[in-house]
Image 1 (cartoon, rainbow over the protein chains, first blue to last red):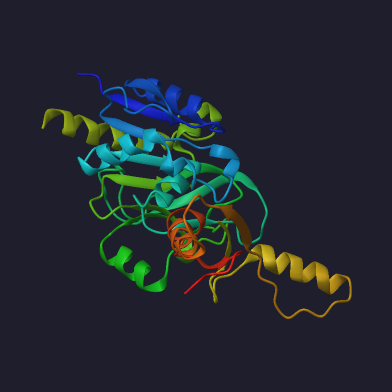
Image 2: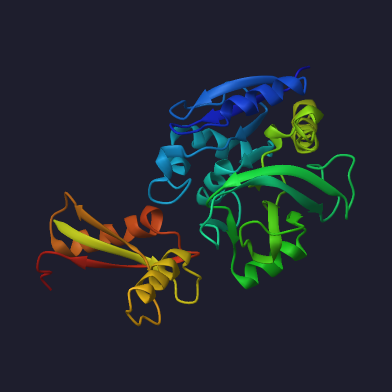
Length: 225
Length: 83
């Protein structure tokens, strides 16, 4: 059975099309969902894509977190379905309380658009075929990508294995070089780098496919159960 | 009922925006040892009295207007609060 992956588009999203295309390239069926939709069109997995939802008004992701489609994303996450937040999608998931921490303006207040190297912290269903210490090359492009969590929370995240990736060279001031975290259950993950922009070696790297494959694998397991 | 919510970065949290403003002030010759940048929300709530407005605004500030991980807020009634 082909896995269906919903991509939620908000007013101001701009990476939803790349995410839909990447899902298709990976052999899954992309389902476009509008922020006002009450459900995810029967999808087994969801990507909350990058962009500037609601113009980044209030705080990046804060208003999108309150939209009807996010209610459906919460339901899928609560049922154990895989949810991946990319860039603005990461911000949305933290503001929605589905992921720990928050994304703040880059410490240097500069927009960063560049390839970054990410160090794998440990094996995970999100990272099929790679091991602790491996490096992934995936681009970032953001102004508000500085991950923050309080010291006590950081200790808990580390202890629970919720930090999946760290920047080799920190591009934004993120605390402890954190690039990708999951929720406690492990089925919700978020990162500022863009896996959907790294799916073809012609464009420099196909390492983004690893995370997307992780999403599809977990959705397939869900579907079988 | 009019009420004002002020949101500011928590003490001890790096505020790059405030720091950029502070550096600019320094460039103009003003000696500022610290600048913190926040937000102000003026709300006009359809509730019975100022006390209720402050209570509702506090809830709104907690749920939406601020992120408690990095921000704190205070609420001020713009009309007299009767005891």
